[in-house]
Amino acid sequence: MLFSADHDEPRRILQKFIAAEINPFVDEWEKNDIFPAHELFKKLGDLGFLGLNKPVEFGGQGLDYSYALMMAEELGAIKCGGVPMAIGVQTDMATPALARFGSDEVRHEFLAPAIAGDAVACIGVSEPGAGSDVASINTQARSDGGDYVIDGGKMWITNGVQADWICLLANTSDDQVHRNKSLICVPMKSKGVQVARKLDKMGMRSSDTAQIFFDNVRVPKRNRIGEEGKGFTYQMVQFQEERLWGAAACLKAHEFIISETIEYTRNRKAFGKSILDNQTVHFKLAEMQTEVELLRALIYRAAEALVAGEDVTRLATMAKLKAGRLGRELSDACLQFWGGMGFMNETPVSRAYRDSRLTSIGGGADEVMLMVLCKTMGTLPKN
Image (cartoon, rainbow, N blue to C red; front, side):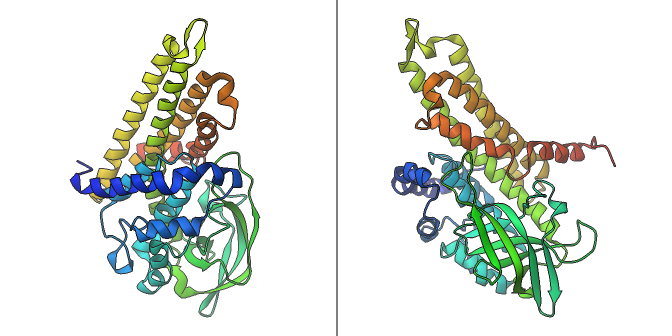
């Protein structure tokens, strides 16, 4: 059993927080194309939600991964995709490798403030020419005495405009592409770090996303996470939590759109009866609800395996792939049932249609998920 009575109280507190401190402001944040990350993260940090499964010596709660998954699922009740995604970057994308492999010194400097909500973090992997193909990144961090000197750029960086530090993946040697990378914590105020522009996105409007350049940026080697040359491996491990988190955050969001669509189609009349009374509509919604439950079962199974210390690469990859594809199918079908109103930006189904599209791209595109799965099945052709 993944959840117990011990999960009930933090779940209730988080639900209350979302209802009072997030959802009333979502429309404003979506309109402004940004939300106040420092203000919101500090409130979440004060409640202990930014370090549920992080070490207690750095301010975390020291709980197992089931609590982080519970949080991800509840964040799906936020009435947009951008804010939960930004929170997920802080908790399950920029900090897992740091918490697991970082030295005490670097964890005190970067992890503790992220858990407390005193610092906003972002993760710097993707580049204009290297999105899902992590091995092909070009950002360099050359050795210079006790420092790294970083040159390059990162693209599509969630929280990048407001972040205080970035968990940066960079090439630190000329070794093979899977053994030449390191993860480095880089303060965003470092000389030579430039937020080039805030990107204009189709969806996830309330989440700030940046393009960032690094020009002769000098940081001490003590900011490196773990061993030099292990960055690719650390990032692959970190992806397990990121992909599971991304899938779990879809569950309540999907259910919300189904619920809203039922309500709208029940009250909308056409040809003498409600839209919902058409078999194609209520059957499709029943199928979609079934698919959400199947996805939940897969996610819970993967989370149970992760809590047990198992490698969940295969299950997390399946969950992420299914979540993205279901989000596309569900939002498209529901929008169709809303008719002309579904095409209006003011409706929740329109926002879901725009926001859910990213799940099949971010954190590894669907095609990469299929490659990973084929590799685990022994069916991927060898070069």
